[in-house]
Every structure is written in C-alpha cells, then in structure tokens.
Length: 482
Ligand code: ADP
Ligand code: MG
Ligand code: ZN
Image (cartoon, rainbow, N blue to C red; front, side, top):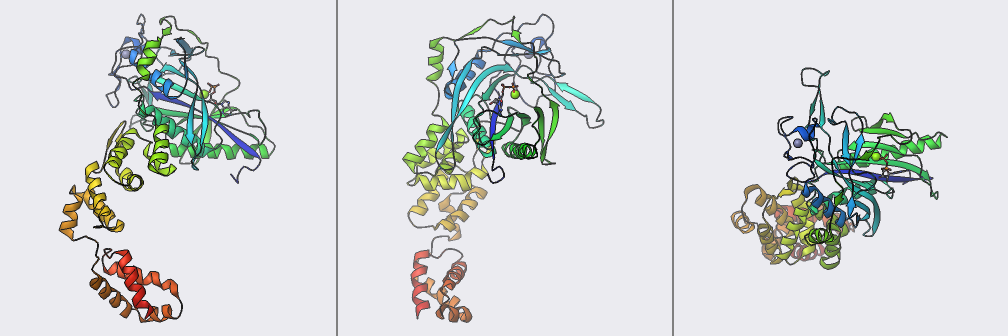
C-alpha cells in the first residue's frame, strides 16, 4: 500500500459466533430473535440463586464441527471457567467461558487471495462461552432511560481467536468472509452480522517492515459489517502510522468504529491485561469428548468452501473471484452446482450467478430465496446454446423472467426476441443507417476506421439489440468498403 511504505500492518481478529442451537447453552430457554424482551429467560440464565447450569450437547456438537473444519486440535477433556466482571447485561456477574483449557486449539483457515493463491491464517483457539444480554438505550421518549433484554443471555457462542497473521485490511475482511462461510457451511452459525449473531473485534498494530516483533495493538470492538471492518482497520492503520511517523507511540486502547464520522473513537484504555479473576466453573464438570463422538461428527461434515473453491477453479474452469463469491453462502454454492449440472458451460453459469442471480438473492441466515428456479435459468441457457438468443437479449429475457415468473421460451415467443439472422433484413438496416450518416461515412472512408463501432451500434439499436453480431459484421464490412 502506498500509504504505508515503511510500516507493515499486523491484524488479528476475534470472532464471536452464536451457535445455531434450539435452546441456550446451559438452560432450556429457546434461542430466538425478535421475541418481546425478557420472555426467553429462566432462573439459570438470569443467574438467580440456586439455579444450576447443564451443558447443551448441541453446543458441543456444533463447536466440534467448527473445530474440525478449521483443522484444530480438539482437547478431549476441556474445562469451563468463570470470567468475573460487572456489567448490567451480565446478570450473574460472571460469564461462563473456557479459559486455559479450551475445546479447540491450533487450527487455520486457508484464505484465498485475489491472484488465486492462498495464505494460511492461524487460529489460536476456539472456545465455548455464553452470550450476555443486550442493553437498549433510550425508549423513544427519553434518552436517559436504558433497559436490558436478557433473551440473548446464555446463548452458546464460539469465540474464534485468530492469530495475528493478517497483513492488510482487505485480507482481514476476506478472512472474515471466508471464516463466516465455513461456519455457515457446517451449520454452526447463521452468518448474520447485522443481527449480531456473528461479531468481530479487530486487533491492529503496525511495525517497521522487516521487524519480527509485534507492535502495540489497539482493539476495535464489535464491528457489524464487512465494509466497516475494512474501513475501520484501514483508518486505524493510517492513524498508527501517522503517530509513529510523528515520533509518537501507539497507546494500547480499545476503540469503536464510527462510520458516520469515518473514524475510530477511543472507548477505554487497556493497560496490560484486564484481571477477570478467572477460576474453574464449580457448577460444571469437565467436558469430555470421546473418539467415537468426534468420528461421528466428522462423518457428517459437508464439503467445505475452500475445497469447493478449488474444485470450481480446477475442474470447472471458474475464475478465483467467481468461485469465491459463489462459496460465500452454502445455499448459493448448492444452487450453482445444481445449475452447472443442467447446463453445458459451468463458467458461463458462474458468471450469471455472480452478476445477475446473486444480487437478487435474499438470504435469511442459512436460507436463501432465489429470484428464479434452477431449471428456469437452465432453460434460458439452452436458448443461448442453440443460438436463439444473443447474450445481450438473454439478459433482457432474464430480467423479464424474474419480473413475471414466466419461462424463457414463453417470453421469447410472446415478444419475438429471437436473434435476427435474416441477411436481407440486416442488410436493409445497415443501408438505412449508412444513408442517414453521410458525414460519418465520408470520415470512415477517409480513414477514420474507428467509426465502425458507431455504425455497428446504430444498426444494433435499429434491430432492438437482436441483430446477430457476426452476420452484422460481415454485411456492414462489405457495405462500408464500397
Ligand atoms: P485479549 O483477550 O486481551 O483480546 P488475546 O491474547 O486473546 O487478548 O488476543 C486477542 C487477539 O489479538 C488475537 O486475535 C491476536 O491475533 C491479536 N493480537 C495479539 N497481539 C497483536 C498485535 N500486536 N497486533 C495485532 N493483533 C494482535
Ligand atoms: Mg480481545
Ligand atoms: Zn434460561
């Protein structure tokens, strides 16, 4: 980056992913969004005296799925700990988490780069913990009122701590996208940044290029969109470089990203490590997982996004960029594969999926609603294959298919949209355009050959985009040469 000639950015992301379980991690309250506040609570998740936690097996299954997908070592015997701190959204006064004996350690994510290569980003650890409640500030009438909704308190989270291996804001955003794709692919998380079920803290430092020691880092909390992640990190890198360039020192602080202002603000200082007085959770036994359990979970893992990307590029000829876009959401990848199975040209299918279909897909967590059905688009491709449509007209037909729900054939028939190959008709249009453009014709014949594009465009327009380009080229070339 031209902006940072002498400094190298170093970034490590911490992700909190809500595990897609029916009930919470340590009680049987339901996990749901949008319910009235404080209706999905019980003595355990409210931390009332005497209530005891009991670990939800599904939390473990999903955490193991992620651990396996990220190539982590799974601790056969892990433990829960209490992280003690006071905050209004934390009813017990401590969070159940895993501290020195986490379930998953030492994995990696293969992050594909724009040039098609990939870089292995280390995963330090991934551990199970519980979510806190949510503070709601202001009630419409008064800004001085804050309320707390505990529906979220006690939902199972997987905290995935990435190693400081990322080297640019763009790479960090890509890592986040690809990590999210893995979590969604294994069904562990719904990938929803806006609703907060997938949250990210970014740790950022810079160091002199060539230096192997880590610089002082700042931590940007709770960034809730991919765009913001990239902008926030870019801003923070520039700010740190400016500080160091001026001879100052980076302060170890916690910040947040203010997108309206386009900058980070300091939330609090963070000197050394905070003292959470961690101690083993006395109300939960150690978590012991058997080889048989791990093997059973492993046998149900789907093909992961990275493997899908590689096979799309190597076996189906897709570009790296298309393969990446398609594997960002498992339902989109499934849809693409179904389409590719019904058509002759996977690369074209990928192109259409990325440029036309995907922008019209509405995702809701792991579910996706497509603007049309796979066989409908395959039907349109068949009309491209047999030459009935040019690719320009096909795009119009596609738009009409999406708008009306009718088939490609029905639209082609009703609107007479076939490619025009009739040489007589095309020649007549060419003559019409040439007659109407005496100045351009003289210039063209005088040597301004670039005007060929003008003539082609005019005839194409006259034909409503339907003239067969090759026939048009031949006829126009002949008429203009005279
Ligand atoms: P904490 O819990 O205080 O945030 P951790 O040791 O768990 O501290 O570190 C969290 C994250 O910070 C990790 O994702 C790690 O990669 C990242 N990190 C640590 N040191 C640096 C650094 N100097 N620059 C950038 N990221 C860092
Ligand atoms: Mg942290
Ligand atoms: Zn509960």
